[in-house]
Image 1 (spheres, rainbow, N blue to C red):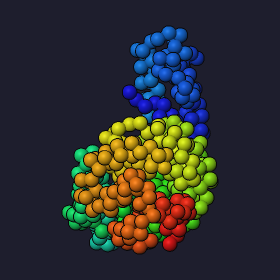
Image 2 (cartoon, rainbow, N blue to C red):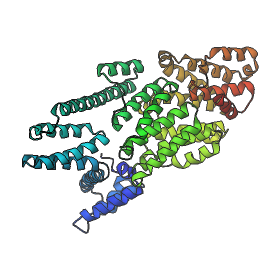
Image 3 (cartoon, one colour):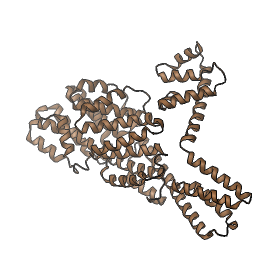
Image 4 (tube, helix red, strand yellow):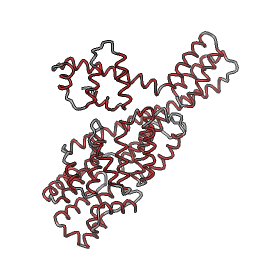
Length: 498
């Protein structure tokens, strides 16, 4: 079924009203039911059967299906028209210039034709529109024999240089697709591969190099590929400088207002990297830039990016020692519907962690009980790393609540499901961590034992505060808090601050 409700809720409030106005102008009949269907879908409280009864006074599946199909066609046309107006004005202008220039050239009005092409070339260069430049140079070369002042060899050289840039970007696009497709297969089939090596091989195959003349979209793709590699290997420390250098190119890019979606995504990636590197204030600064661009163009992408923005903002607040602020912005958003599953689950887990660290265990347990799907389902939806974090948190929650039988059961399940994977990705320290938790749950007095303390200290090889994964440190903070008889949240902040 076409996800009409999800599509409509992804629109901003202004877009929703614009769409209703669009339907009203388009409708020839006064009794058209498409606007009624939109309003009922936006209410988000009725089932399909109830919507059908509201519109037709009885159950009429065939009529509702036809109405939904017509509404979907209207959404496509509305979206296309809106995007043509808002984002492709430069492209459309240049296409009109090229068509006009060719008309004059065909009529023998060569001076006029070339003046229009020159004007188009300046704009296309400014926005790095390589495919359009290709068409401009093609027309210039085609009629070069009519222009004695034109330096043909120089024009051909510029044309070939643009072709190389265009091909380079197409190769990057192919490489980006291959990498994402491979990672999707890894995600679904749970394969273990060397992500960094795979990316390097794809780049070598397609002769990909970063350079200052890449278009905005290509810079975005390059950042996304780098981010994928770092997230798979928990290595955010080594990509930060690359991200910042690349963003310096983006800040002066002519398309930064025109390509809002890519720009917002890039700001999110940078902010997330800074958070993972424990630079919380810097992360919040980039989040504010992200919010600024989310609000541009009548908040076109506000709804789409708001959950990710809130998630990252709450995480920064929590690690800045402002847990109540984090909780205050998380609690309302987890009640919202029509949020992407992966972000919705991240929001839930983040709030559970905040409750847990503030000793609000019953709230944490109540929220955790809503994560009722199987581990296989979560692995399929959000990946094995997220599922491991959820399972670890569940074990700790049962330990704190004194549910010893549940602890034993969950630890046994954890070892059976994740031991092999953790060994394959060289994260044996997670298995060791679970063993210490098991020892404590079976014999809490062991925490007083000096030998236990020494064993814990000697079992974990840390790579330094700057490089160590922030979530790994948070889990270890629980164990350290037990050994030092301190508050878990305060120990977490101490470890993270260094």
